[in-house]
Image: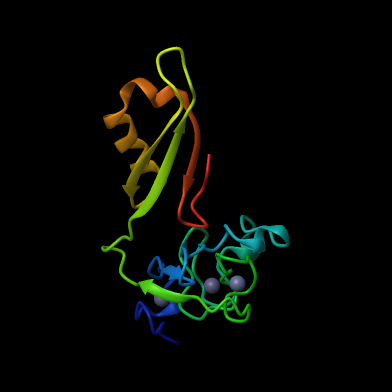
Length: 155
Ligand SMILES: [Zn+2]
Ligand SMILES: [Zn+2]
Ligand SMILES: [Zn+2]
């Protein structure tokens, strides 16, 4: 039996660790859960054999426990404990989510020229909602979304 030094959960209980936000001093990166990183290239995380992370025992979609050797670096995709990216944890609690700036590029239409709106939100879904509130006419006309977070999904 061993306890995670971050969330203090017993690893064999198969509970998720905290969602971590890492920083390299320039950009922020969300921690990559089990089953969403490079491991999907060489193991089938849906098969019973890989139901739990072999090192920290979390389930698919859960955050690895601190120091797990399966956790991928959100910056380079390598093994976080050995990749040398020198990331620091900037926020360890699930409650205090770090805000990310999302830039919504809107296609030029007859009505107006192309424009960019910047929305601050904790995740892409929330950012899209906020965008729809502020720019209901443009919501179907989004061309590109970028964020200042290296890992967040970009459409
Ligand atoms: Zn793990
Ligand atoms: Zn943990
Ligand atoms: Zn790395």
